[in-house]
Figure 1 (cartoon, rainbow, N blue to C red):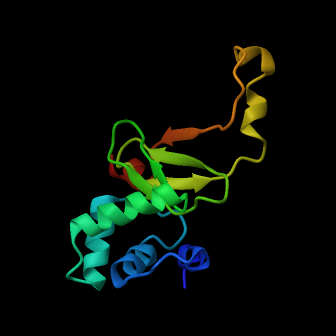
Figure 2 (figure 1 turned 90 degrees about the horizontal axis):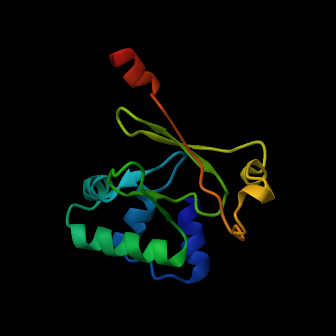
Figure 3 (figure 1 turned 135 degrees about the vertical axis):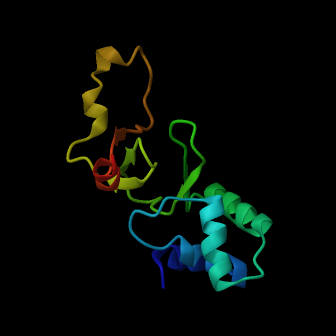
Length: 139
């Protein structure tokens, strides 16, 4: 059983067959699927699942704070189930592959108080860009 499924059960969220399959698709390390990718993988397990069910469920999971919606460089939104463990992202500028990374230091420290222009900072989003091994090998 995935961590996401456990969290949803603990919340008392009604797990229909469609919701369960979507949560199972989102299980794992470094999962950052688009809605279409979630739908394709869910349809492999439950062929009758509709695209609307996937989009609606992803929207609900984001609203619940159980999944993070990630958008980088104008690409399609991706859905990250690693919503409760602070992390940043490493994104391939070639194919768009995304991995979770954890900084060894507090990223807020990199922005000194005098550089905050009086802002009271509530969160930090750091994204690293580069090329993944497959893109480096491929050209």
